[in-house]
Length: 166
Image 1 (cartoon, rainbow, N blue to C red):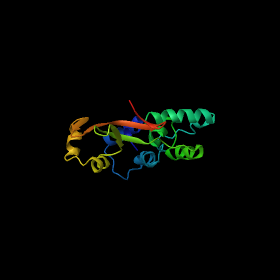
Image 2 (image 1 turned 30 degrees about the vertical axis):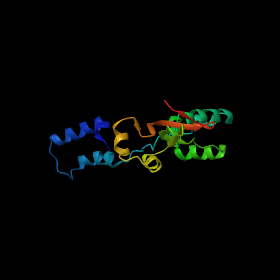
Image 3 (image 1 turned 60 degrees about the vertical axis):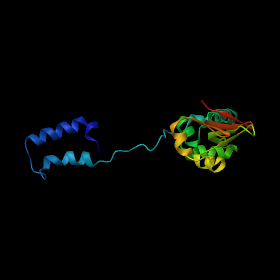
Image 4 (image 1 turned 180 degrees about the vertical axis):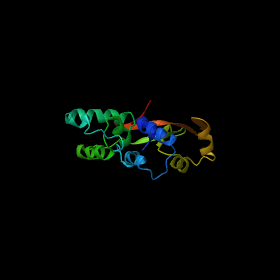
C-alpha cells in the first residue's frame, strides 16, 4: 500500500508517533489492518470489453487494414483499441488476417536497378556483405557504398508493393 494515496492514514500514523507508543500498542491495530488490506489492481490496459469488437465485421476489417498500413503490430493495435493482446490475436485468426510484412532497411543495388527490403541488420549484412555496416548505419540514416544505397526506415508490404510508413 502506498501511503501517499492515503493521506488520512498518514496523518493517523504521525499523530500516533508523537506519543511514541511501543509497536504492540493496541492503538496501532486499526492502522495495521488498513495497511495489510490488499487493494485490487488493474492488469494491463484492459478496461472491459472493447467497443471495437462490437462493430460490424466489415468495419473491423477496414480499421485493421488501416492499422496494418501504418505498420502497427498486434501489441500496438491492442493498445490503440483498448483490448488484450490475446483477444486481438484471436479475432485476427477468426477474420483470417495477419499484420503485413515489415522491413526496417532498404538496400538498393545500382547495377541491378532493384530494391531489397530487410527486417534487421543481420540479414542485410548477410545479403550485401558490406564490412562495418553495423557501425556506419548506426551513425546515420542512409549509406552509399560501392553498388549499394542503404536506407533505414520503416516499410510495410501490401498490394504487392512496399510502402514507406510515416
